[in-house]
Length: 387
Image 1 (cartoon, rainbow, N blue to C red):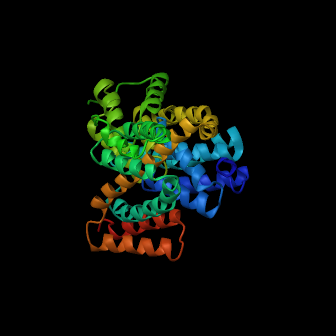
Image 2: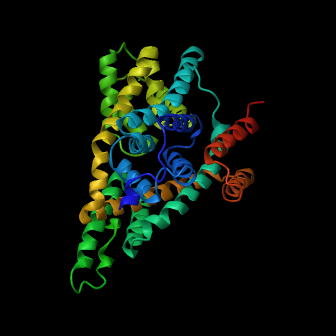
Image 3: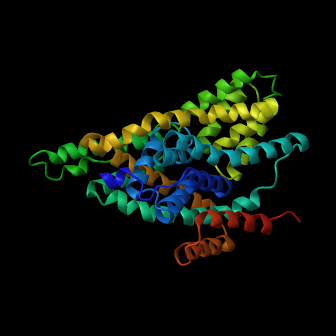
């Protein structure tokens, strides 16, 4: 277990800050892409972690509420430099995006519109598919090699996710099914009991006017609650923000909320920096800072609390089996997101050619994925600029 519990190569706090600042500036494409970029940069290139340890942290990040890719950054910072690294890595990953979103929010308030983003999205999406697919090809063999049982779990998780089962249900169901199946298989004469496995047995769960002056304390508590409760993607965040800010509190209009989510998706780094934009609209620069701290604070606390238990889980057969199931389900969720993204990204011949070029640059020339995604964003912006 020792190799799974320690980094292959230790790092300094200076290197930790530099790497996560760069990722915060160049990691476009949403959580799945961020995690793939981290795997490329920190596991394969810098050897800070083994693939096995990376998978354990990914499983834990998916099990707790909050932005999973940001929590991966926080977990990795904790692995490398303790509590100081936890704060440093998370802050450096969040800060560039928060500052960018804050500037865009200022321009939005001043000029009444967000920048053109269609071209940037057009360029990013095909490359994100390549980056995530490469990460899956690196991580999946490590996750599945332990037993054929986990391949069944992964297949079931893919089907469940494709049918619309909530991500947290897929993760928990996969973990529990793995524990149950392993116990059945360990019984004398259990034979082919693995056929009982599969998260598919789980039932699918369902997936204003002008704002009045808002106190900073209430703004902070509102985003603190959202950060402590939201699981899943930016689309889940959109549902929470709409319920809280548009329907219940009437702080934003529908159009303002959609603009906020669009800005959070198009900028690099965490999608949850949508909170920065919303906070600025509601209460200016102070509101932006308060909302940002509020929505990300639960992630820092949850990582600090849960990280010591990950190593203990690996020493327990039952908890280890649960974590194995969660790990392969996390990869299954990434795979389903990638397929869904591909359907909307590879819309014409130039987009397909961009994806092919991405594969060649990643596989043949080993181009760093962070720069590849950033370059694709620039290409898309230039080729689709208004004339």
